[in-house]
Picture 1: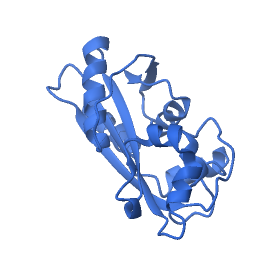
Picture 2: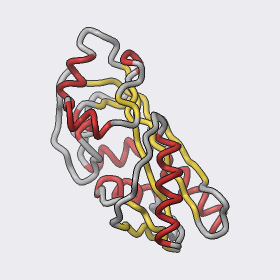
Picture 3: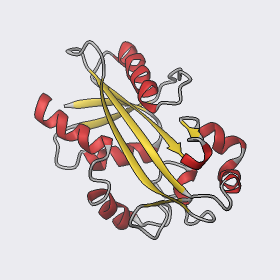
Length: 193
């Protein structure tokens, strides 16, 4: 089975392919501009992206949206991660939380739709952690973006950018075993294959 993935982010593609290890599905990246609604919630954005992509591709497809939430900052930057990173950068985000609680979380939402569904099926995951004091590590193919240099998952000592491929794979199999991609892979295997 082929599933179109409306993204050009290589880190997201590689991450999702890892989630489908052992599942007879091919993730097919589709390069397309998708208008993104304004919302604090990644779930709403993922659903609208999937509906738009399916309306154009006319094949089973998924869309993924992620947000980064810092409770001490009222959730900022929420689903506006790219805007925050492009304007104040990760250094600016770290400056905002100096001397404050460094608890944070990634929220990922994956929406799937095919011709049998009247609306997308949604899968979500919350990955809790802490913000490092300063950027650490170098972005690699399995990283999604700049925040991986400052995000330390719970029960880890390294940022995601400091983890090598094997460390990232082990973390994904352990603490991150309930990612939205992995939950979706289990669902698709049970419901569609």
